[in-house]
Image (cartoon, rainbow, N blue to C red; front, side):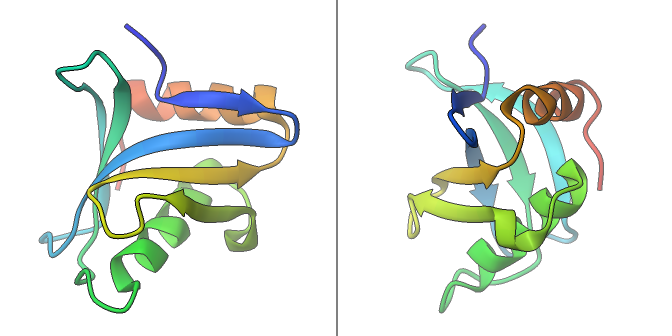
Amino acid sequence: MSTPFRPRENGIDLFVRLTPKAALDRIDGLDTAADGRSHLKARVRAVPEHGAANQALERMMAKALGVPVSAVSVVAGGTSRLKTLRIAGDAAELAKSVEALSRNPKN
């Protein structure tokens, strides 16, 4: 199974499948698409209007990974369920955190 992220020089790109308008904000673990690509499944209560769901996702992932909100941004898939988040920081530490999240999802 592939990993839901790609290391970068100054952080990682994290692949996420987002479900807006959920009952609660949470990370549901790892999933693999039909094409074999892995991504984290996430849910947010925010609606997908005016970027609200994307902002909620950025805040939730920053908290889960222990980085400032300013270190997380949606760089692809702004209006799609499948998104790419760019997370600035130490790539090795972020990779460990993402792997832990994919094994032990949390709210």
